[in-house]
Image (cartoon, rainbow, N blue to C red; front, side):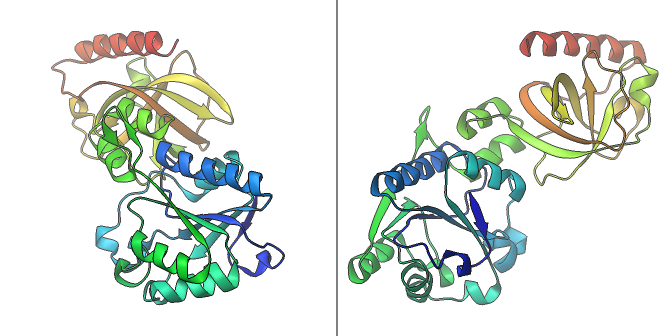
Length: 305
C-alpha cells in the first residue's frame, strides 16, 4: 500500500474505485466497505483508494466536540493495508479545507485529481462546508459528472448499528466484549511502562504502570487482558483507577502480567482488553485486597487460556 499526503503521487493512477470517510476504529462496517472497494477494483482492473483525513475533522472545526479516537494513525494505516488497499490518501484537514463547498471538493479532488470511476460511502456520510455534502447530493454530482456512487447500508450486528460513536460509548462504560464484537478485534490501548509507587510488588503482585498514549481508556475497573511488549503477548490482569485502598487519587493503569517478573521499565506496551471482571473497590485490609487479586488472577487465567 502506498501512503500519500497529496494527489501528486497519483498522476499515473486513473479511474480508481475510492471510498471516503474518517474510518476511526476500522470496525466491521468499515471493513465491509473497504473490502468491497478492494474487490471491485480487482474486478475492474483499477486501483483501490481510501481517502481519509488527518487530523479528525472535529479536532479542527470543533475541538470541544471532538471524540477520543479509537485508533492512532499508525494502527489505522496498518489495518487498512491488511485489507488490501492500493493507495491511502491522508489529506490534511484544515479550517480552509472545512470551508470548501462539496461541489468544489468533488470537482477538484475526485474528478480532476483522481478521475474516479466509483465512490463508495456509508449511509450516514457527509462532507464539505457545514456537512452540506449529503449522500443524495453526492449521487446527484455523480450523475452529472460521470462517476458512480455506491452507498453501503448500515451494518448491523446483534440488532445494533455498528458505528464508531457506539463503540466509544461501550468502551467508556467498560463493555469491552461488546465493543470487540463490533470492532472485529479486541479494543487496545498503548503506552510506555514507567515507574510507579511499587505497591503491587510490595503485596506480591508486581505491576507495570502504563503511561497511556491512547485517547480513550475504558471505565475504571479490573480487566482480563493481553499485554504485548516487544512483540511478545502475555496474559494479564489489570486495574484502571486510583487504588483507593491505598488512598490513591490519580488515575493509573496498572498491568500485572501473569507469570512474568522481567524488567520492562521504559518499554512500549500494548494492552488488548478481553473481559471486564469487576468494579474497582476499596478493601478494608491489605489481606482482603491480596485475596481478591488472587481470585482476579485465577479468573483471568481461565478466560485467557
